[in-house]
Length: 90
Image 1 (cartoon, rainbow, N blue to C red):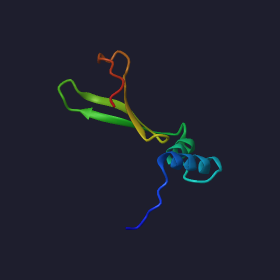
Image 2 (image 1 turned 120 degrees about the vertical axis):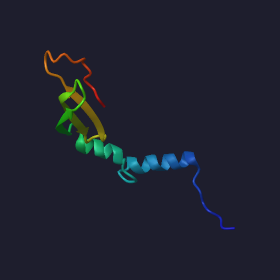
Image 3 (image 1 turned 120 degrees about the horizontal axis):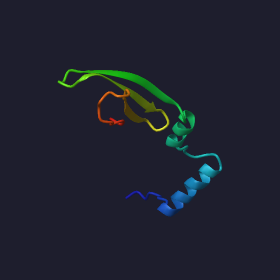
Image 4 (image 1 turned 30 degrees about the vertical axis):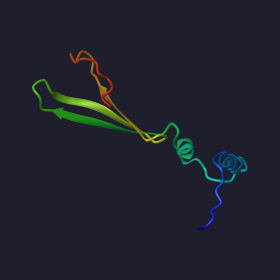
């Protein structure tokens, strides 16, 4: 049997904390992505030609947030369109 040296979990966390504190160790990739891309958004205008009975051309805005890779789709309502307000599709 080969003996393997394993560091107990509490000491491993303390060792990782010290390495990061001394500007070494593994960087937090999620934090780095957030810091690099904070307040950066890719925005697309979408037109959906709905062929249903009460359909028609509907416009949406798709926003992709680079900081956390989140997507939102908002419906652009025109005044007095007669449609129920449902601003967030996704």
